[in-house]
Image (tube, rainbow, N blue to C red; front, side, top):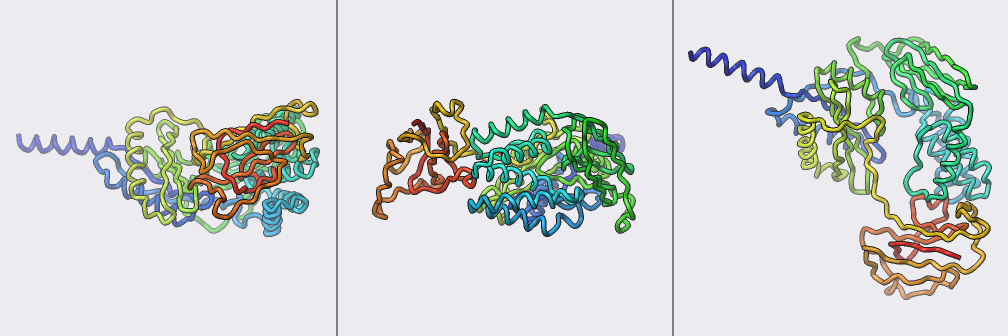
Length: 471
């Protein structure tokens, strides 16, 4: 009887262990402003924390993976000349030297796209936005609209970065609508088994891949082989089907045959990543995979955006972002909280999030709403010029919620500024930016994020609340 009880107890314990979810922690990726060391250290803290929860989860070792593609899509990366031209253009843009920024940025884009294998399309998209903004500032609307149309053509569904005002957003939406009316075609990409196809930087998944409803014009195809091989081709779509067949030369250094594709975690999680994580979990013998991206949110803090992939359901659950100091000294508590949420999701995944989605949390914006009275010459309020208003303009500041050191009053922007002794200069509350209100062609703008386009600069008076501008 004792022996039977012992056997029953051992069998029950074995079943309990077998029922525990198996989780593999994918090495955390490095986002903008973060360091590889910080990402690796925080990922290790999360993994160690999960390993202490032996009663609820089993952490399995990651499988051996093939080398992850380097940023830009190739081993060597974009050419030094392309990088130099783009850096020069961005610096000129930030310094408001638009005449210098435009040719440098355009040259950088041209050089970047010359080799689809190494092109970094996120950099290309940012450069096209700056080209458009620079041309609008210089009064060259035709060239500006052409840059926005090229951006809309290469990046369907692209969203402008936060900070651009409604007038610029509307111009981009107009460009998107013009692009929608262009002729369409499709691109069929074939290649060696297991290879991954990309079109204009977008991951299309494993070959063979077909992308339908492609806007006519020049497009850029890249195919990554399972052993690090690279293939690139520039194609022209003219309302028909374009077929691309990738062929690799001699493979790079020999690699173990049991390697699986690297998940290659980036800020955007798409269907291609789901395919790679399925193979990753299968090789590791895991039910779930935790992915994460560490990026900078301030001078002193990093944030980690994470998601849990359920292999059996082929679905993602996005977890709450966490923040910690740049030295990763305060990250233990955040790793503990992240492990808690992960365990809850392994028990009940909840409503899965649809791909594509981003691992970067939206930052709260310090918003100053502008109400503009349209003029007779511009009934829509969409004038993008920098001409001065025809008559006197007043900006009425109506503080809300936040309290200023001094009350905000009606300011006549045509009146000369009144000098104040240094001791009486108003100072913004800690944690609040100092802003300038600039009136541009019928639009009152406030902010610092896109000062290069709108000519916004820091002022000596703090401004928060609602702005009403009329003339």
